[in-house]
Image (cartoon, rainbow, N blue to C red; front, side):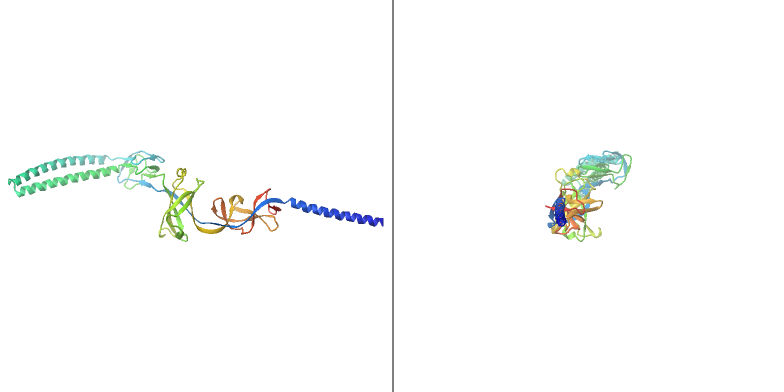
Length: 358
């Protein structure tokens, strides 16, 4: 009987010990879970964004050439030089034009003298004719001679204007203040009519030439405000749609559009022609799932985000991303509305980690 009582006592102690151990294990499993902060995924109403790409260009840009054929005597500027309007850029040898200029000036002197002499004769003969001392034929002859000398003087003066015009092409000057972007010739080269000599552009006015797909061309209108992102700038450059081509006949299935940039102070100095630009047009409203970029996990070319599974465990969900909206980015697939995102965790997350939700 004593043996039976001892056995029953030991059995009760074992059961109590097992139940106490299980309670401690359950309590330990709860305390070992990682504390995290979560938020429920909801759709946000944002402005509908249309994205285009293009290249920047200066509004004022010119390729300078000449109408003369001659040897270049001197190039006064180089690439990157800042020039003022009217500044001499290139001198072309023009001795033949200078010689013709002197010849024309001599012809003008001769024509002026002949015209003055004919004018005096015409006045004298007109007095004689009024006093009946000269015939009508004599007056007509001197009048014709006077008109011929006057026409010859005008012809000589026009010839001088033509020579001066040709001479202007021997001295290439800056059409406006700007920067020399490219030099095509050097001293000693032979210049030909229409041959490019220098490229110049104004550095303070820029535009972006973009292509708009035919599916979105009706959403873009003249005067729309846009944001232009350039790689060298952290803040987008404001812009405005200057014009949209009404036809894509010569540009395939895309329509040409021009964006005029309206840079803020400190931005224009960092803009250069030829830079690749991203243009964002915000127009209309739509609902999207947005997450903060800092919540994303990147592994190679894959991007994911931590969510809470139905068992309160950490789960890395791979997602496909879309357009950016400030510090947030659109999730196209891989994340559903109502899911719980892990916003902050006390430790390093891994798949299957037990979570304590706050």
